[in-house]
Amino acid sequence: MPTDRPGDELAELRARLSAVEAQEARLARQLATGPARQPTDRPPPRHRVRSFLAALLIVLACVLTPLSALAFWARSQISDTDRYLATMAPLAGDPRIKTAVTDRVTAEIVKQLPLDSLLDGLAPADRPQLGALLGGIGQALTDGLSGLVHTQVARLVDSDAFVALWTEVNRNAHAALEKMVTGQGGGAVEVRNDTVVLDLAPVIARVKSALVDQGVPLASRIPEIHTSYPLVQSDAIPKVRTALRVLDLAGFWVPVLAGACALGGVLLATRRRQAVVTTALGMAGGALLLGIGLSVFRAVYLDRLPADVDQAVAQAVYDTLVRYLRSAVRVVVTLGLLVALGAWVIGPGRWARAVRGGWRAGLGAVRRVAGRSGLRLGPVGRFVHRWKAPLGWLAVALAALAFVLWSYPTVLVTLCLALGLVAVLAVLELLDEPGRPGEGTRAPA
Image (cartoon, rainbow, N blue to C red; front, side, top):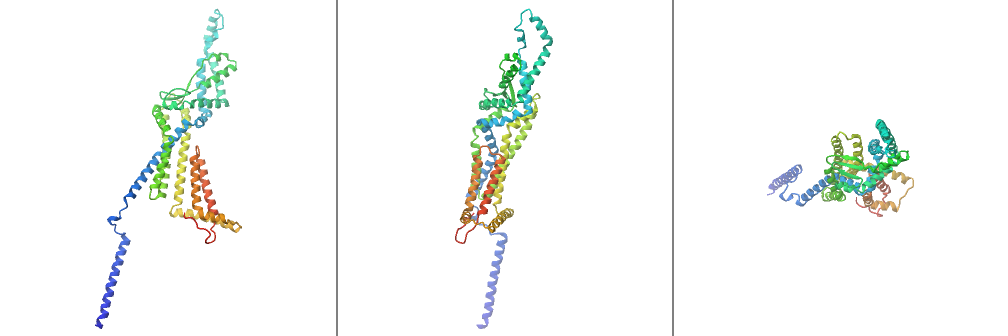
């Protein structure tokens, strides 16, 4: 009936309104609590496996980093003569080493001076009188000869000739370095029980010649003396020797394995930029732990030295031997921080976007000033605009290749390569000049 139609329509509208309100309520609850997870919405198992493998590889890379630095250092000292000589060279100018060598060589020469041969050229009847005379002034004569020898040795040690002689001694010693690591004798460097010793026979021979030239013919009768100068003394030498041998054998492969683990972990990670930051900081932390370990081991080593060992000399030798290893630690820490910083800058964070915005704004202002001065880049600007991203990654790859191919990079070399890369990226940003519409399309970043 006509009178019922308005009521029916009103009821239908109310029913529809209630349904819409119920649907809106369900949508609001879903937005507040998130959609209900269905059994089929679980992350694919392969993603969990990838994440686990990526984390495992990154941890392995961080653990292998200090071992890589140790292996690289050990291999460089054993297989590279010039590197070994560069390591030992500062000891020739260290006052503590000079004093110790002077005292040791003087004592050995005086002990071997044939004072009894002074009576050989006398008649048998005169020998008792001269023997009694020598017996009375024997100590004074010995002191006088000891002072003369000490003066000659000190003069040699303070001259440039000692630097050359020290290099010669260590060059000859390097040929026996591998035998020293394996515990076999021979050569100028040997391991005797728990002490690494250096043979100073060439130094004594040079002093003998100097004494003869100074009017002491008695020195020509001194026999060949092989005196041992202790470089390192510790009851842990056998264990350290074994460890160095292992590191020498694995010197090339440990750094390669560490790099492969780091690369594999980043490639397997679902969030690769964060993986790069984590890996870089982790490897830098591993190297830093090695540096701390070197300082701790230094204190323990010096505390356990025998009482008759000169602490100052032991400190000088230890610090000289590990100085390139400490340099490697600083290089790895610096490189890790730089890589982590670079990965952070290209990220989506608010501060990272602010840094990139400031970079582009500053270089854009320079480009606008150059444009008002009449600079037009033309095809070069359009080419850079189109290929800026590939060119930037090429610059990163070349910087990394230069670092890898550098024989022994230092912190200064690492920073220079980083600054050079930043300069190249700045030039690309300055040369980036979009052309007219339709003239080129910028490559996606």
